[in-house]
Length: 349
Image: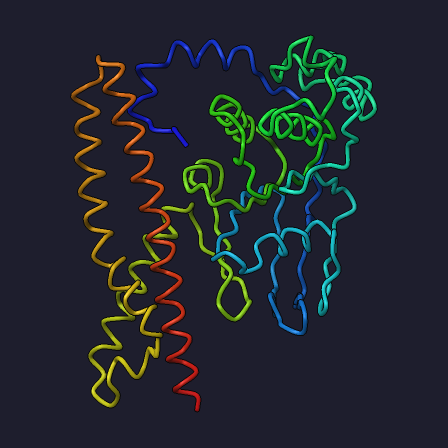
């Protein structure tokens, strides 16, 4: 995804015009002091616990990002908070003022033959904005950059990104005060993402989001919940960058500690498979090279600010480097956490 700060200056005017056409000014509801409380919550699938022993209290001003490896239970945790699924142990209690907004990866059950304007009108015929002005569903669609022709088309005719934009509009039109978002940046264009981020900055409700988009997590979240290998969750103040720096520092310290204990060789303590060890070694060598290339590209972008084509080329490469760096660091954390868990299991024997 092309979201590189250095390129924004060059294309600022084009994006300014797009952002002016796309504005989010939607109603909200009062939120009470009690939002959602999780009491010793756990969830299992096929006899295996995915999440367990979760005690957490959401506050009215929450801006929470959920992180963890693929399959760790991020979407499951969101669904538990939303009361879309029942826990297999514990209890989820919700405040009396809470009105959920859900924007997930699962599409809304809108028949393909439904016309776009009808999908919005069936949802809400008109909306009173924060400014007090009443607007029709058609006007709301225009605010979300749906042309008159697109409004008359069927849902089946929409592209994947257009359908996601429609579902985002429907979610926000419900005036939630607790918004739950599962991979919200998937298929949304850059301008919609920028405006969504600005909207969330000024929004008065609580937000819980699961995303692999580290930039988005840094932009909208003030706290991180990480799903641990044992299915518990751990709270980390700060956004994704603060969490990542702390986690990398902690893992590095842990690895140093393991390597200096004389009573058992490090290889026996981690017990990673041969392939996992090779992958961990490869990633450990690869990350510094990615950091070096990132620094070089950033410097080159500063020098080529007046050259549109060169800036675009460098920015696209930088976006790829940032994606690979995020993926590599996430995988490094997964493997080191796995090694720690195996070591803990071995020590417990």
